[in-house]
Image (cartoon, rainbow, N blue to C red):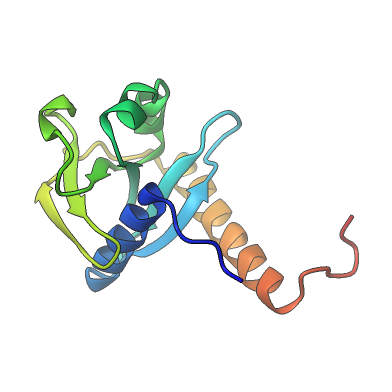
Length: 147
């Protein structure tokens, strides 16, 4: 039996659905580098990389002390929050998405800071490999050679 999704997971799902309408592929719970885990990474049709942090409450936002470390791992950084989230808490120099479990809307576009080519290649390759591993685990949860 599937577990019900948590509020942050619902926000991530609605955001990913919306970004797919803009031709972005999304992956949840992505680790760009040791010690960082982003809620959602999105890979665009031109290779652009967006990071989206999903916050379900004031306390959830206040507990996030690592978000500024994500900025160097994307071209654009967004917050995705529920419609009743107090958006005045969020930094104005970041993107803003309002989402629920079904869809989302980009309210404020994030400023662009282009990744350098080497980091973009590393992240794109890691995105592809993570996605392939997750897809493979759906059809073969215990492949040969695994621990």
